[in-house]
Image (cartoon, rainbow, N blue to C red; front, side):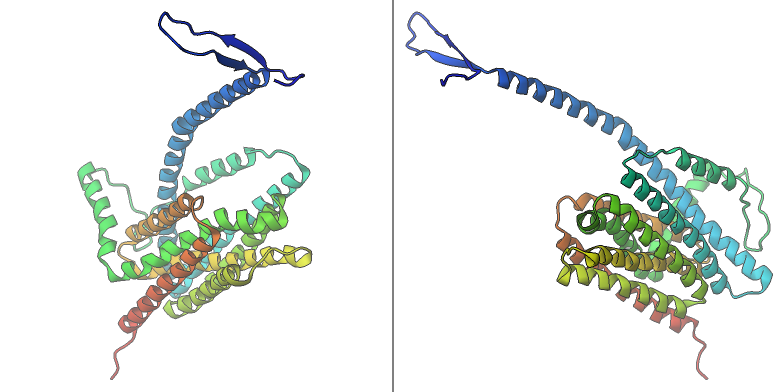
Length: 375
């Protein structure tokens, strides 16, 4: 052993009556003992964090997902019902009013991405920690305001709550509303577009920010790029909602949004490479803007399309929307650590082709149904 080493050699002799074992050196090193303590502490911390994650974060995530599904289905159903009632009372075209209402709602909803990400950009640049007090305040305010919503029937009149419905009848009606849309050819053709809308959202949250924005702009730049995404999402939602009037307008608007997404995905797959200078900052922001445009189109047009096509089972149709959106989002988050960016882009391009093809078939079928017979 060289001089200056901290190792201490301790020889132990294992002797037995008829044993021929040789001397076995046992090396005890001070550095190793320190590392062993660190390793034990690390193992203990990992165990505590894993325990906390399993018994706190997982149940909390399940509860939030369950509650959010109820809120989103209720939002789509109520907004469509109010739009129909307003169109009937004002003698306006129902499809136009549904599109306008969805445009305003999704424009306001996307606005929180703009302001929230600007706030995160400012906090990350200053190196300060944020607070959840503002989020809690808005959540509480939204919950209180929901208590003032009134249920309406098809004629726009308030409907009293019925207390004579049994639990069995309620469960039977719920199961029927979930299964019945799956037996419709319209729903089967629109499901791929629902799933794609969730895929592209998860791509933006998981892959785009990690592999495109962060290397080019840094962690603090994620807030700025997502603020651009939210701004164009909000503007496009308002404009698309204003332009919606029926099936033909929905087809044209969806085609524009899908084209914007296809440009980004093909750009990333074939030609994009991180650069320095102004272009290195401009390219991720331009992609974020195009992705926001496509997301605004899908949000407004999918909800308007469901409201127009599924008048007699609006709740079941919106529940299918959230089921397929949430399932595709979960798939992306589960797969993202195990597949490359190129593989994810190929999945998205395939999703565009399948979903847009099914949507075009749906529009052709609906045009034949709604078109007047030739004389």
